[in-house]
Length: 425
Ligand code: DGY
Image 1 (cartoon, protein in one colour):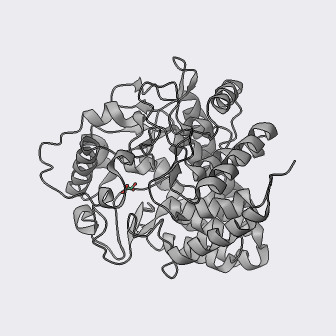
Image 2 (cartoon, rainbow, N blue to C red):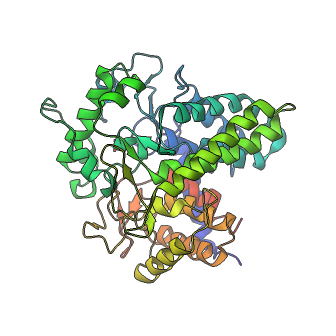
């Protein structure tokens, strides 16, 4: 089976490469100019994957600059503020994480080990020393998660921005417990770049800023944050992504180390924990993987695109496959970030309905690896059509394909190059 690649696709390949080159700031890549003017964690990893289709050395540089921002405790931050830029809020002063380079105080989904392995596979000769140098930083990052962020065996987030799915329905109820009384006045910058109907609402932003203030006031001390924050939510996205990343780290451990035993036991322990955590996130009320509020013990009741990362994590589910095929019937451009049957489905508002092409790549990799070939091919072809119709937007309307959010977007270009343009892997 192959995906449909025609002459139009060839010009799309050139456009995708030019987007990566235009967003390249010299060693690191911005997600898109204006809206996101810094280095974002998982955007950067996907940029590296895109670069690896035509410049493997540049791909490694991208990962190296990201891990240049790693904290002493092992955390890899969600943004690295390489150069001051007034077009984004909240900038380094609001985060108050006193270090160089300046960074935020929270993390983002750890897809790096998975894509480091893929980039290594592009050119093992060139990649060997580069992946060897990244192995211990990756291990330290995973260990940070397993030390500070495991509850009920799953991975918790302490800020909606950590999940990458900022305004997902998953966080609505827990975020309501956040005290916003001291947030005060601030000026958002995102809505000067993008239509406000496509972005989180003001009430969401007040909570985002209140949680940044809470973390900053603890000096970004994970133990203190655990003790005082009302927001602590186990996320299927984070849990599935770290589970997959640990499997790939284990592979790297065996590939790279003559005596891998010590790390191997530790990583295998993490895999068993996270497998149990993934099962804990099964919500029987919606028959799907769901977020779990650790403070209240309640599920969110949200079937999101993160729920479909089970295959990416190496977990088969016939029930999730039924959901996926239902959504394929309902929408020409799946997978929506929120199930279309949910009362809050909002097809252009960021993580409350739109389809995110890069997220489809993660789901698609999982389906391919799990041998769900028909579903994988359907998703790749639908994403191919979506990008061919609309171009390289951040996200799109799952019914009409209308492009939304930022344009000339790095990770959409990257997945075109490394996932769609290459056919079935
Ligand atoms: C934003 O600013 O919208 C980002 O998603 C935060 O990471």
